[in-house]
Image: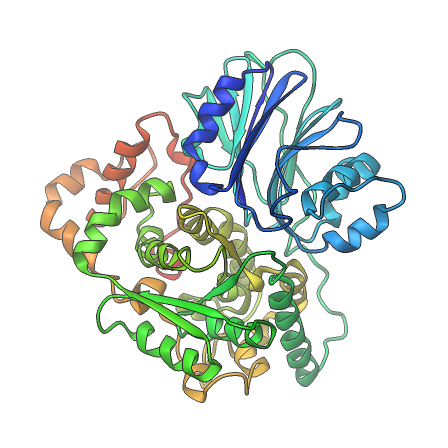
Length: 512
């Protein structure tokens, strides 16, 4: 995992170095800045594969193509086998596979990649920017004068004329022509959608579906153990993280599990139960209300958002990542299971037909600037790589093909019924049937900041400040508290439209 930067239009190396310094927390192990033609690419590296040979930015054999890469390509070994004999490999990294694959396939290589990624690749055709189909890894780009700039986080950018998020499953080619002063940037182009699939014509029977789901979840977990450094698991004691831990355990000699919460938090007790059942080396961190208040400015600065549900869930995520980073460099989490298997309570109001399918697709697409943004920023704040097995592209696409009726919450069965049935026997019965709690609820800190806002922000202040920009409304005094901290951290230069928001109060309630 890494932080990446690109400058295109002129070889402005000092600018690239300044931008990279602002996101150096993403890659504490190494860094590199390379000028290339009309631009610069740079990377701060968190070393996961080929620790000594994987320095970036990385060139191909001919020296006419260079890449700065953030993420993991889980099928890089099979792709490498396709390329061997026609290319000379100097490292064991997935990064080098990207270079040689691009030499043969150009942008057509993008649908072949199985993983989480964002990268900037510079060559004779210009600058290629690309982001994985679910947006697990972040990427932003924009224009400053006659320069095009790109980076992993918003905080990397100087004052910009315009700035955009590169959408999940999209790429952008900035050509090698004249600088972009006063010209429109080209529009990003899509290469893959995770939920644009053809439904099953002949639907498998339920036992076959359950067996296939169990196999696919297991394979998604095992795939994400690819690493030359220790891998752990975020363990809340909820269904999703416990399933991941259970599938990890047979494949790890010493599995480190991590949980966090305030005194008496339900997650602390449940996580201990799962850790004892699986025999993990368990670590927990208990934090206080004062710890929450002290951490809040750091959390919002790293999160780059003021959305209230997102900030609430980022608080325990922040403490969890800090704890895990002291023991491992990679941690798996249960992110994405609720979007995949209809885990949120409000989805019960969507019925069991087209409305539910549309909502599941919508919240899956929005993960890129809500929960995935939170997971990425909180882990990378401590130089920790977070991996998300439930968002394995093959698993997501398989579930999207199933009739939505078998995913729908309903009377007499718990949310995520299909996942629970598929993984029956893996976990203690009380954990397998444990109802979903939002991250902040399970950690016990869901009401701390709302109470602080109620004490410090009057209704009159909220009424006066609730519309910080035309058409952009803050939903509560709590969100106004976060907005003030966010503005203090980012000034007036970041447009509000760049901040991911939950669509409405009902969706907001489900976002954590």
